[in-house]
Image 1 (cartoon, helix red, strand yellow):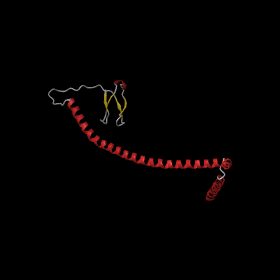
Image 2: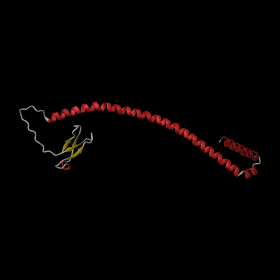
Image 3: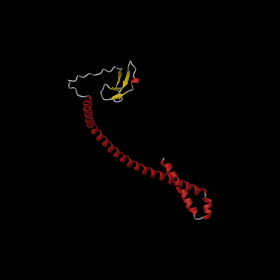
Length: 163
């Protein structure tokens, strides 16, 4: 059974067994309108031969043609709007990718700096641990290591004074 929404925008093909004799509420999927529908006995339309009544097919055809022309008028701005939105989203994606590249480059630089500082600290700790065996093998290294440790102590005192 075909049921038309009261807003006249949508028709639904509903199984007749789903609607009880006393009727039931229905909701339009297009406009979300809820209405009560009760089954009615169809009254056959009688037409006289002499009357000039347009055929149902021609009325339906005219209505479809009108709806198609309305659809074309509606679809044109919608398609233009979709096209503009697509272009805008493409521009935004390009800008966001450029921002992402800049952020990635700065975060990479920061990561390399952290790795460099940690590596430098590890080398200093390793030199301090192996100071005696290294001085036995390379006697000239004693003066360099002494100067390095004194410099590190000066840097430590400088940082303490800043805080």
